[in-house]
Image 1 (cartoon, helix red, strand yellow):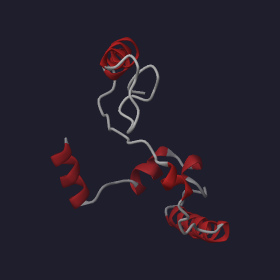
Image 2: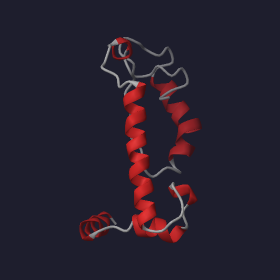
Image 3: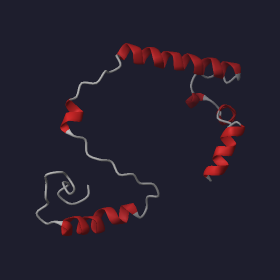
Length: 114
């Protein structure tokens, strides 16, 4: 929240306390928390029309099919590596390290990012 009332910056709304509300709230609550967070993004409020707008949604059956395919691929991958498990949660760390080992392009990306 940008201020105590939670409405600062909303279109068509003016906080009765004005900028003072936001400044005091940021210093008291958000300031100490934000000092401990390295990555931050601003997330705009969702409008009522965004919530009401009918979008095409996936059916539960199509999601279940996608999950089943992903689990089958994972099971095959782990069987080839001799993991004796069907999920990452039940694999030894050495198997996870083998699966997650970055290729040349991945290593280059990691080096550039760091």
